[in-house]
Amino acid sequence: MAAALFLLLAFLFGDRLRRLFVPDTRRLFAGIAGTADNPDDVRPLPPAWTFELPAALLLGILPLTWAVYLAACAFDAVLPLTIAPLLPANVLVLALAALCVVPSLVSQFRAHRSATLRRRLPVPRVFLARLRAFRPARPSLYLFSLLAFAALAWYLMASVFYVKDGALYAGATVFSDFAPHTALIRSFSHGRNFPTEYPMFSGDGIRYHFLFLFLTGNLEFLGLRIDVAFNLLGALGLVAFCLLLGSLAVLLVRRRSVFLVAPMLLFLRSSLAFLTTMARMLRESDGDPLGVLVGLLVNRRFIGDTPYENWGLWAVNVYGNQRHLLWGFAVLLLALFFLLPL
Image 1 (cartoon, rainbow, N blue to C red):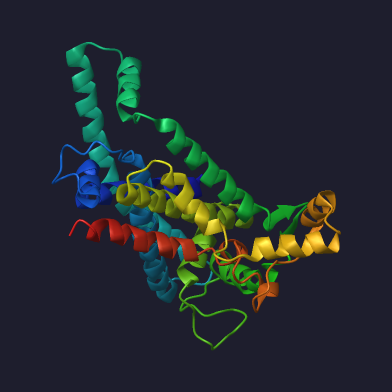
Image 2 (image 1 turned 90 degrees about the vertical axis):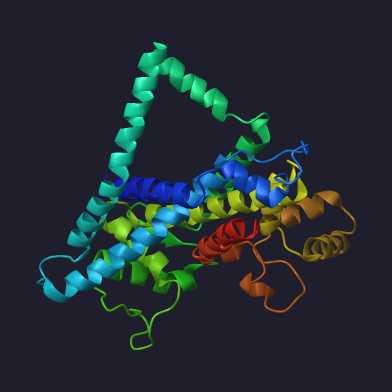
C-alpha cells in the first residue's frame, strides 16, 4: 500500500510539473510537427496522453527519488541504528509531495463539481463526456501499441527475475549482473548503505545506476516484493520510452504506423544475424523447413557472427539486464520534446 502511494504521488507530482512546463500539449506537438506555421496541414498528430503519461512519470519519479535518498542520508547521520532512515525520509517527502498535489486536486474537483451542478448533469454523464473528448479520432493503433509495449515489457522483465516457492530466480543471461544489483537493492531495503557503496565491491565507489536500484530498494522497503519492484520499474521505464519514441516518430514523420514501428525497432537488431542464422540452419537441415523451425524453437544461445555474441551484447537481453538504461533514454527523449520546438 505504501509503495503504491509513493508511485501515485510521484505520478501526480510529475503531472503538476508537466503542466507547469507544458501547459498545452497540442501546442507542443504543433511546434515539433511544424503545423503551428501551417494550420492547413491535416496530417495526424498523436493523442496528448502518449506524451503526458510518460512525462508525468519521469518528472515525478526522479525528483522524489532523489529527495528520499538525500533525506535518508541526512537522517542516517542522526538516527540510532534501531530506526531505518528510509522511514522518516519517505514520510517527509511524501508529505511534502501531498502538500503540492492535494490542493490542486481539490480545486479541480470543486471546479468540476460546480460545472456539473450548473449544467445539472449527473457526474457519470460528465465523466463519459470527458472520456469521449479525450479519445482520439483513431485510438485503436495507439491503445493497441500501449498494450503491446506493456505486455512485452512485463514479459521481458518478469521472465528472467521472479520468486517461486520462496526462492529468488534470475535467468542465465542476467544472473551475473543481478548479483551485485540485488545486493545493492537489499543494502537499502534491509540495511543502511549511506554513504552508498557497492556491497560486493567495497571501496570501489558507486556507479551511475545506483539511484534506480535505490528506488527499487525503497519500494521493497515500502512493501513491494523485490522481484515485483524490480520488474515493475523496468517495465515502466520501457513503456515510457516506447511512448515517447513513438510519439516523436509520429510528429516527425506524420504517419500513425510509426508509433508502433519505431519502438519495435528497439527490440530488433540492426544486423543480418537472423538471416545468416536461417541460412546456416537451412544448410544443416538439408533445406528442410521443419528442421529450421525446430532449430529456432530449441535454440538456447544468442545468434550472430560478430564478436561477443555469446554475451547477448547486441540483443534485447541488454534491456532486461540493464534496466536503468531505458529510464535514461526516456529522459533524453523528454529533453528532445522540449528542445525541438526551439
